[in-house]
Amino acid sequence: MGNTYGDWLRGQREAAGLTQQQLADAAVMTRSHIAHIEAGRRIPSKEDARRLDKALNTGNVLSSFRPGDDVAVADRFAVALELEQQATVIREFAPALVPGLFQTEGYARAVMGAVFPPWSETECDRLVRTRLDRAKILAEPVAPVVWAVLDEAVLRRPVGGPRVMAEQISHIVRLVEEKRVRVHVLPISLGAHPLLSGLVKLMWFEDQPPAAWCEGVSVSKLHDSPDVVQRLVQVYDLALGDALPLKESLALMRATAKEYGHHD
Image (cartoon, rainbow, N blue to C red; front, side, top):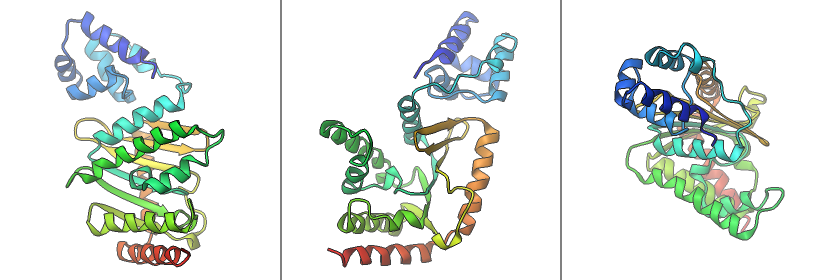
């Protein structure tokens, strides 16, 4: 990821003779948030940028500097994955595919095998391993707290065929039964809803502002703006309110896995 913003901030901080902690204290931020900005993992909100400008006596340079959207999707996705590993709370809406954190190897391979232009077998293997490695955070007993709302279409689309789907849905059911995640299904019968057009992942952290990752076909964006994140939280809450309760969602997932199992 191009790091003009982070490099510039570090240069200004060092020129002012401040440590990250001293700048954090002056700008009423955490040291780790400053570190994330300097490393290019986060972009400060407008309010953060104003406080940084004031602390560094740099006028409105940081406040007016807004990075362009021409950063490669792969680079933005790498930052989103890193944030996912740091999050204490993750809430996700999936409109068409099982979220990456929940995917089994068979399902992940089927998803990777459908991309265009096709990836090589070696690249596909690497990406599947990366996806499965991400899920290791679910082996932790508490953090992060993970909630997901799945459009019913996620369960109905036979990605990889009946056997893969039976295994995949059973895996999600186990995660819910073990109380490691919470999953609600949004019924197809609901029709149109505000989140229908794409994936949304909301992330909260112990020592930095929340962020949101939104994804569509060839379009993805990591949002740091508090106003945008708050609006996405509200839309997610609307979808959650329309979703089936946990018990009914589990029953639907068990029944769907059973239906796929009968196709073997």
